[in-house]
Image 1 (cartoon, rainbow, N blue to C red):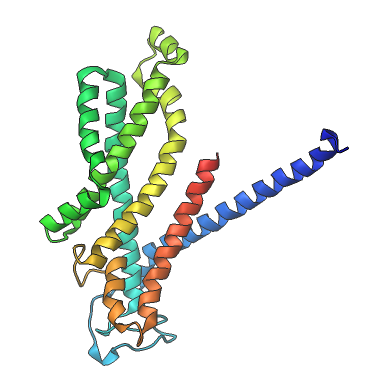
Image 2 (image 1 turned 180 degrees about the vertical axis):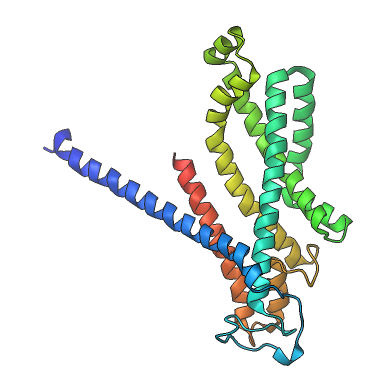
Length: 280
């Protein structure tokens, strides 16, 4: 009969294998994101011109000089892809930062003050929660014909409520803990309580939410451009690049595959990091 002592080496080996596979997945995800960020930062500096048209280069295939060829207006596909990646990543990061700052601040305020302020903020959050996130973004994008600031504002408004509700719910239980009560009796102040008690507990879940928020923001921008209510030409944006390239898929499939590949790599990298964060 197999004893626990005999099974222990196999259990330890299986645990070590899981840790190694998790480390490998984390490294792959980090490498993908690093490569995309470098492409977004350096690419536009190397390929500055992304909107200049040259109809003599109509659907020119990839070459050593232009690895992704030219589009239907003779523009460099690689240059447009670099600028589109920078725009999508930059705007997504700005949306997530704005939503996180607003949601975390209001969540902490509601948990700390409670009373009528807590109920009022909860009521506002429930209104936003009742509306689909994409519908909020669509409304703002449609009101101003897809201008950049409306898309930014719409995505940020759609995401802040998640941070608010999570931070409020967790902060209420943390603030009622004996450790926080002792810190309050010792008059250590709100800064000490937030720094030593709230942030260490909230940081892991907030990091996971921010990673998912980046994914959601990038997909929302691409979806809006794809359906025609997002950013307008000649702006270089991943969803818009796909929309412009679809009519020429049979003649120039690289035009569609390039932005799709960037989107897939970005989503795989971000979701890969998030899955590792959730295991901690």
